[in-house]
Image 1 (cartoon, rainbow, N blue to C red):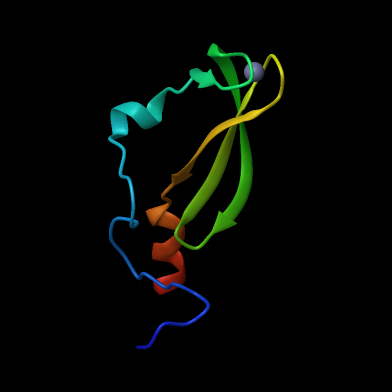
Image 2 (cartoon, protein in one colour):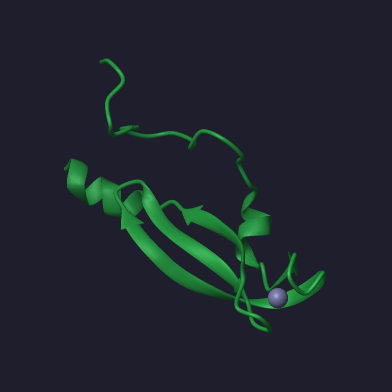
Length: 82
Ligand SMILES: [Zn+2]
């Protein structure tokens, strides 16, 4: 398979940084570059992809995006693969 516009990974860890489950459970405070301190954040669902749901964290004070993450949904994929 050559490189195409779509990266298709049937299963396995996503490339790039990998976070532990512990970190994924709670991310209620993140550093905000605008506020220049750790702030409470809100979690927004951005995209639902075959490999998982993409979330974005935004500062509750100024609304700046302070982070994002991918929630892998193996169940969803399992349904598709069947
Ligand atoms: Zn902020």
